[in-house]
Image (cartoon, rainbow, N blue to C red):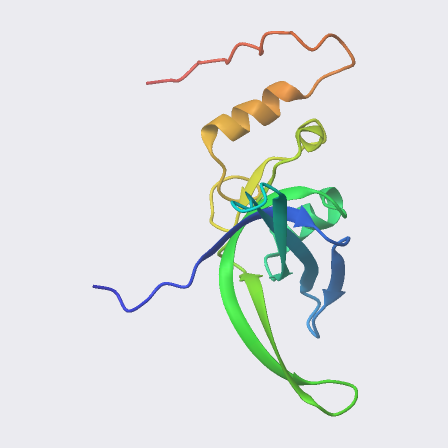
Length: 168
């Protein structure tokens, strides 16, 4: 059996607009926070209760960072996959602090925009692997992105036929 697994999957809403910074060599680093909310009914009172957890997200993947910067803003619902990382730092008062973050590495991680209004703006599923322009993407996501664009016509149009001129 393999040593261990460090994988985080979250679906939540951005708590603030993404913030883009640059490393010393010019690589972008994107930071934002995501809120995940758990809801239940209290058995004793029948009252609906919520608990919200906040997660700090850091993206080192340039392609995913561009997507986050262009299409994500406060309130956007996203699905993401990353790894937990804890770092230590000294705050402005000289105190030692620890911060645990969900990190989407340079060649790993996935970011999917879940808001339907984003689909018409070119959103969809983007991953850190290789293959398509931005990384991994499910075939249905690619088809949905291709067929959801278009002019200002009616919304019940059939998708355009796929040209299947394959030479084998």
